[in-house]
Amino acid sequence: MIQNTETFDKICDFFEKLGFSKTTLASSGKGRNYKTHKVASQWIEQLKRKYPMKDEDYDNFMKWYNEREKEIKPFFQRHREDLRKKAMEEEQAQEKLEKENQRIEERNKAINMAVELLKAYDKIEGVDFTSENAIDKACELKIEIVKGTYTPTEEQIEQVKKIETKDVTQYLEL
Image (cartoon, rainbow, N blue to C red):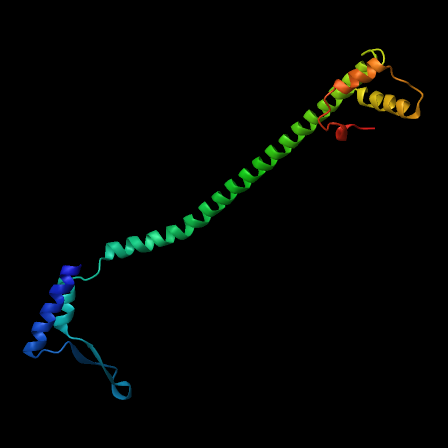
């Protein structure tokens, strides 16, 4: 294409130096409608046919490509958006699962602490309490101690002091 353009320009320069014009007058209509206008000379038209300066196949391909691109871009945008939404949903589900697991772990810690406390005060598992009501029984025992209706022995108090609480009391349910 570049070579054809350079050749075309050189031939045009040569013909212009010889005195040939690139344009000529053409007429249209008859009578009142008769008009003249400038058009490319016949030798220019013949040169353009001989040395094409644009690639029709390339132009057709680019037209086709641009049309397909207009169709394809929205498809991939929707696809990327769907993937993003799916990833967000998975992330939210994972966070929810982690929170639930953390809540269960913290509840188990509270139950374990309540069981240790009840055992320290000589309560028997299965008779005085179960794992389901251990927290409630520990709270009842604490209320009895606070009211003074239950007096622990020195040995029981020492056993309770050995229990590591690690701030689990905030999860105890009354």
